[in-house]
Image (tube, rainbow, N blue to C red; front, side, top):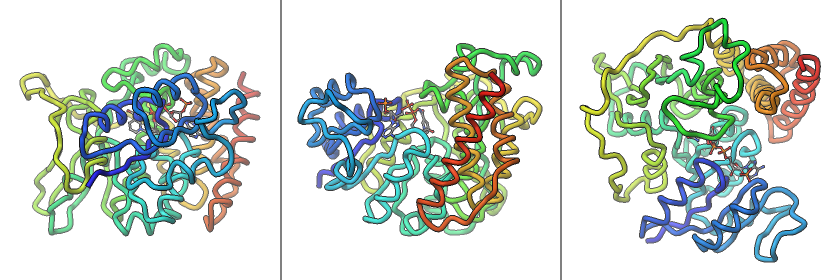
Length: 369
Ligand SMILES: NC(=O)c1ccc[n+]([C@@H]2O[C@H](COP(=O)([O-])OP(=O)(O)OC[C@H]3O[C@@H](n4cnc5c(N)ncnc54)[C@H](OP(=O)(O)O)[C@@H]3O)[C@@H](O)[C@H]2O)c1
């Protein structure tokens, strides 16, 4: 049976690659497209891929009649889909994940922020097997755990260290956006590229892994080549991993075709192409935000939502050349230091922590400018 897919965040790095996969697969049909504000690209995608529905999240005064926007837009793009790919960036993606959870729709999840800020509310959908990870590390672990009948010892997430890995610690504080956006191994959207350089992205992935894989010990190891996409350590101490040239189409195709569909060849590399594979410990001096955000995840409640909101504001200010690279960590740490956490009971409690933390982060950014 043909699987109908809704692509949320269709104009972004993940969304664009997902559209190519869906287009190439006779078993997948594009049901709907949603973007944030990039109407020009959305119109091109609509013309080329011909989905049943195309929608834009921002208010759109000059939209053609066949592009929907406004209230209930999320419900409309999700209605009728068998699988929803959530590739929206930021905590803005949470609402869509919650709709999938409420309706029992399979969620191919790239938007890790859904679990970072709202894992508590997605718990039942995870337990029901409704979330298939798209992040390459989590997809790897998901695949490595498949077929393992005995509990595993630990999970090890690999981290390239982003562009910050090649800049001296002294110069990192004042590194510019062009330098930071030049990721050595992955070609991604701007926020995740900056988050890779601060390792906030890896801290988010630790939180994401905790929600997806339960109480298993989680470690992080530096691996600059991004060939090993993470490890699972089995009961007898052996390591299981997925290796290959970094390409997000691999985890994307896996999530969209899961559990029982054939997979096309994406990566035709050979071990001879990889060169030496290096692993080392994470250097906390280079990535000071990592520990702060992991701790926020351990503390739970609305701490991770505050960390994410602070990071979203700080990264936007950095990309707008208002604050320095080192200031991103300052904003996150100061927002967390002033945050009063509350229990997560519903979306409203998360959105309130998100709003208050953004206000505080904006105030800190103004001071640092
Ligand atoms: N890129 C990667 O390789 C990669 C790998 C693993 C995980 N991820 C995760 O995947 C997600 C997307 O990353 P990305 O790199 O693809 O980001 P991106 O290139 O910045 O694209 C973000 C997408 O989200 C849309 N969007 C923003 N706000 C929205 C809103 N309020 N409602 C609906 N759509 C909205 C954007 O639309 P406009 O273009 O119209 O603004 C765009 O289509 C992130 O959570 C990221 O952490 C990405």
